[in-house]
Amino acid sequence: MQITSATVTYGRQIQLKPYHGVHLEVTLVANLIEGDNVDEATKALWEKAVKDVQTQAQPLITYYKEQAEAEAQKVYNGLPEQVRNQMKGNQ
Image (cartoon, rainbow, N blue to C red; front, side, top):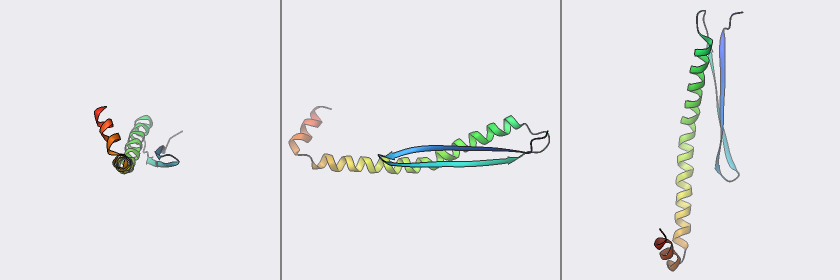
């Protein structure tokens, strides 16, 4: 039996906020010719799939992290000055 292709699917679920997750997924296919090493091809596909999903995820993670930091800053700024000063003293 000759294997003529290798397919890899990699997905990742990212919880960006409570009740707000996103699923990123990529499927890669390699057409093999006689003499190709199936294990090496599959490993290379897997590594690329993981890297591609991480590349897709990074802007989302960065965006939601910045949003969370901005929201935390708004909450902090809304606290009474006495409470903010106490928080500064605890750092």
